[in-house]
Length: 250
Image (cartoon, rainbow, N blue to C red; front, top):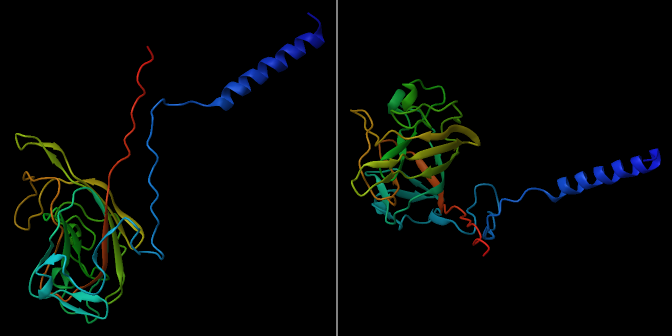
């Protein structure tokens, strides 16, 4: 074989390899097309598919909502816990809150409230700006389970955000845990809990332990005696995209 012919063969072979690489790998899974969801018009605004739980006007979607004070587009904690009338399973939850501008008390007695997922797993709300307390009880902690990775708290009276991704635990017919729950918390744009595996129901006086419950449960906001403010609360229920393998060729 001449040198020119040999060179031509090598070029063709290299071109074939390049062509094979360009074709790429395919999984063979048939995916449904992801639906289009318009995002909110501004940061923190509810996307098109969100369930708005509080828009600053009323708490009609909450049990005991009439017990809280509503003014100037926000709600002030008063008298009782409030719980959503509707139940939810796996979701993305957005909550905005502000601890009291006038600082009173210290530790757990300063701007205390909480967001309870499935009505039992608490993401702590607390004024943790220059306020020392036990670490698994400060703001953005999974209460008595896991401290936040960092303290991203703003000062008293300033509006703060929680963006929470929650996967509910699953229980079998025998009521035994088959899959633990998981929580991710983004506090003021900072990831402070990263897919944390819940160890059970939040208790103050005993260790957390799972109690069987349906995947869909209400969300609860806590009255702990402090006039914490809430506004702009919404959620998106999460449904994973599920693909399927094509039928085998006969």
